[in-house]
Image 1 (spheres, rainbow, N blue to C red):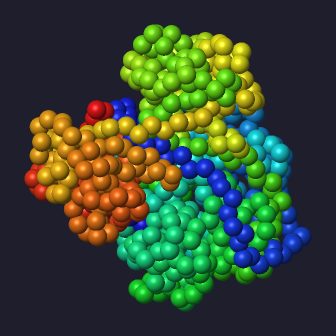
Image 2 (image 1 turned 180 degrees about the vertical axis):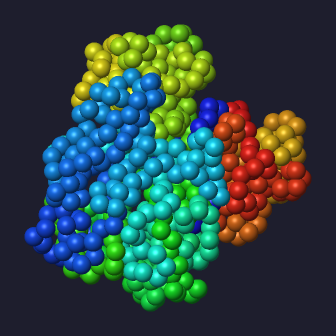
Image 3 (image 1 turned 90 degrees about the vertical axis):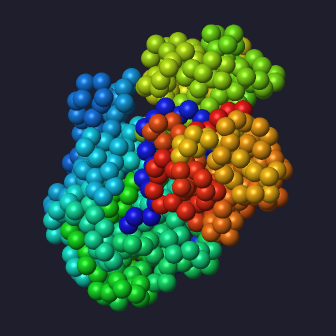
Length: 627
């Protein structure tokens, strides 16, 4: 399914955008059926016993058959391009991740293949691309960072697949999978921690050629916040069926108003399709309880019979739309339409797996922040214009205490000091204190952002896998040398509201809230004044809003995005929320929550700004200027 443009994240991020840090929260109890106990122990054993065997079984965390004793996935490290298979620790067991940890120290590792545990060997390599090119060589997608998503399964450390924009896997000609209108079932374990509304975080059947081949040529689980048809209640995330040219929450499209979204660190998502008269969607907590059916009924108009092709994909739409964000831990595709009893038994098996510890945060764009250390309550400072190592010794926030927190490839984050414009490094492979003296982000300059239970954050350095600490109760410079998190390793992440201006690439002119804000936004100024200045506000959902200095009003994509952008609101709602993406050249683009379209300065910038574009080109690119 193609919904929105693929937005690359392989760039030097040159502007102050905002952090999308989507953390898990406790969801209201689902109205669930009781999961049925079953004798077979693991999901694909249960499916086989129910007469609907797995034809693909993919997981980076554990075996999905009690007898499986082979590799789960393959990784490659950048330092010498060598490969390593990560196997289960024992037949039917959890991944043995210890070799991965030592293999990847001081370098970057990528998941290059996810092995199929069935005898079909429908392994998932990195997608070669499709209608929409990925950021990799020759338009291919890229693999997920192997170290980006640590979790615990059965008390052991394992690593999931963090899908970020540009990440995707696909096998074009899978064996013994459903084709045409043959029935099919799918489940996957995912998360609400990292989601967005861009196409398409999918797992399941897609087109073999990487192109949109029309309605009903896909049958995949979609997990995310996209409301493709409009008219949804709530903001998701939801489980939907990506049937091509639509991620359907029901036959009509919108969700059941009773299910406004599921917010859990581990989610089980389910879809099954009999190919002619029914598709069914279910959701559950992968750590407890049973399943909730969110829809079961007729296929959408124009989708019966199905025309499914023999390709299996993960992390992209059928045409390789890959602007999505998601987490994948395990999943399987079945031959046949599984019974409810079988699915309930699989859910019960998931609960016994013991998933826990998913406390990761992910920045998908940029935010201006300060860090307050719990070690002593003081702000982290890049003193002496950044020449000194970082230390928590400031009582107020100024230029030296301000940083751009931005996304690095593979789900990591980096910090750029406002003190000198340089990037913070865990120098000497983490053996030296943190200091802002790098011009670009490599392994020593990237950190995993960890969400702690008390709302603080911690940083794990990719340089050595250790936690950053404000050592000596904050009296010493920050250094990455801890293996556990305590108060000295906890920081409050303080988001700053900053004044910015936008310069359109369409004509190189500055965007203005013309006529003291009474007229729509248009890019027709050559200098920055009060009408051309906006406060960039970070919202709780990770989106951003703009408050015009011209009249102190909030910019809105009025009329559900049908009208030009104008600063005339006093409060922030969906029409006033925008996702900010950083492009390869360092510019930014804005996607309106009002209609999921990208803001454009059409007609070479002579027309007012509107949220009307489905792709990103020169007209949709803006330089974000710090005023």
